[in-house]
Length: 593
Image (spheres, rainbow, N blue to C red):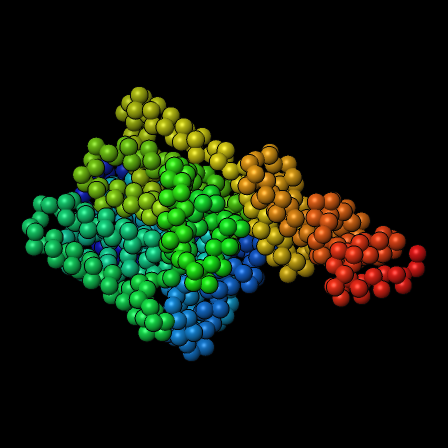
């Protein structure tokens, strides 16, 4: 097998910018060995991660109804039940590729989440090996090996690959896109490379539509970066590339037209996502607020559209939107991983391989940005790689920044990070201390600047803790649920004061957090603790039915029946027509004093 891999690795035309020295080490001139080594390291870490999560993560083999994991699982089971064309989904709102992937896994192994996790970890290990192959299209074996180590050991990828989310599949496909970009550029006469490149980009876009913007970058590169080839060959290459995209997307577009009656290219969530990332109340990441909820009702009623709402918001305050673009650009590279309905910052704690976030996205980004500068003198040979990196960033920043959306940038940035590491090693060997000092200073400066959280008073969301607490509850672990909500409430209580919008957000979060914490105390029969939390929250929300109901119940469990009667009568005076409080008053009045 090693011989076959070696034959393939040596068969492709290459233009490595940093050459391997045959006299320096025979090890670096064995790409087959390096390929197997990268894959083995990545797979070994993922096997260990699988068992760590299996024993310590409360969400392992658990699903909650309101998160993407449940949606994908339901779609996969719908497909297996016989609805292979997903007629039950007239127009796709979420990319269906991952649902079909899960359906294949379930069809082979049965409806077992562990099987899906195992396959995703295998794809993660394969992605590292693919990055090694891709990097060899432009750089030496040494650079390629260093580049591949980043996705092999990255805590960010290890975390995302451990959940029923499409990130492992998308990252694998994006790595293949970069691989075939390099292969097609080095071997432009092989027409099937261009066709495969288009198909791979199209398949990736089915699940992560914003990557379609990179198609324009590839067309620009073919047109101007391959100008040494005759116009006819470049035209054929562009045609085959676009044909590949069309072949990949056509089934999805036709599905939307036939079953939904709409000419929707991939998914219908584009306008909503754009508004979430650019509307008047956005912070640049996934965080719907009260204005969004109100606009949702207006759009559902047909009185307006998301597109018109976004245009109106931008026109009303262009400077706000421009500042938001800078903020989102920072968030795209920053250390903090912006969540949507999955919070990397919370779930990395469940494994020693990821707890400290080693080799995370932002470390790769910092090294990669320095590597881009180091490789800039040979930019004419790297146009396609620079274009992909830059355009994909634009495709995310123009919409909204989440950790899941920006994750694909790790593929090209790992290659540039490998360049940075190898250049540093070569400068040490050649005693070029000035260049080494400048590069190290650049990395340290970026690590510092990208780790500033001043853009957000609280870089976490109460709902993320609430979902984690519910996972603990589903496992019967009330102590874990209580500890999770105690941590969340403490974070929001100790946060420094912000503007009025933030204070409104904090007030809502503390209401949710303390309510959830009280429920956890009640389930654990810790009545005194429940009483303390509920009385504290009732000071600011003394009209809330749910809080009052829990507090009345808590009083009765503690034998404080007079207080229960007093609170029940107070709520009945506020809601005299509510039959619930009428019955509660009657029940509490019959209790002994």
